[in-house]
Every structure is written in C-alpha cells, then in structure tokens.
Image (cartoon, rainbow, N blue to C red; front, side, top):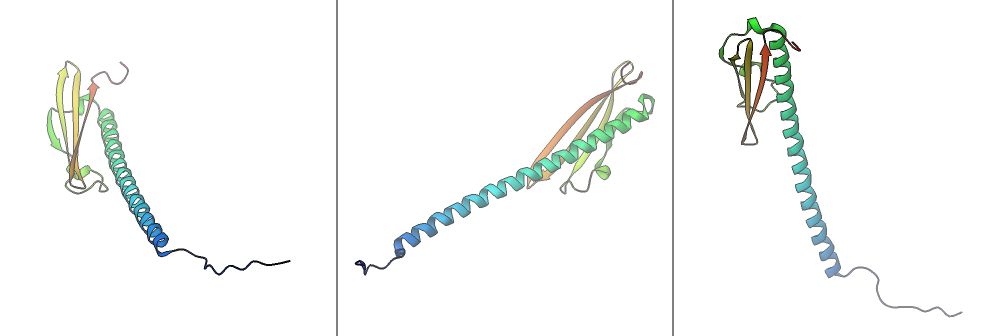
Length: 133
C-alpha cells in the first residue's frame, strides 16, 4: 500500500479570516440593535401597564366612593402616580356633570419615555344609581 503525501498546508487564508470577522461584526451589530429595540419595547409596555393599572384602581376607588362623593372640578393626581413611571410624570382628574344623575370622569396621565412624551386619556362614567341600574 502506498500513501500519498501532500505538502500543501491546511488552514484558512488571511482573506477568509477577514471575511469571517467582517460577517461576525455585522451579525453582532444587528443582534445588538434587535436586543436594544426589544428592551425599549418591553419598557414601554411596562410603563403602559403601570398607567393602566393605576387608572383602573383609581376608577374603582371613585366608583366605591359613590356618585354623591364626587364634586365637579379638576385635581392633580401627580403625587399618587406609581414611582416606577419615568420622571416628569403628571396626572389629572376632571369630574363633570354629563347628564342628570351621571358624572363624567376624565383621567389624563403623561410621562416622558426616553425623551418622547406620552399622554394617555381615560374616560368613565359614574351614575347616581350605581353599576347595572
């Protein structure tokens, strides 16, 4: 049996290594953008959930207090907002007569999310007769 010997060196050429490094760099950069985008969207969703949960709790507290405890006018809710919302947050509550025996409640929440202002407005109605009447 005869064995064939080759004198050719095995391995990668410098061009192949440079191309692999370039492709790897592009992939890492793209992955970084995707992860940063996901983190930002996740944070925006968390802030929106906090705002919604606060408004739901506030609305239920107003409904439990009852129609007669609501006086027309506006008030600031800034001190009641969750601390997890980003700084420069603000909220207001407006109560107005909609019709006889019906009050309209407007709650507005605003905050800055990475320099971008977000404002959410919520409206509900509280009747003199209560829920389901």
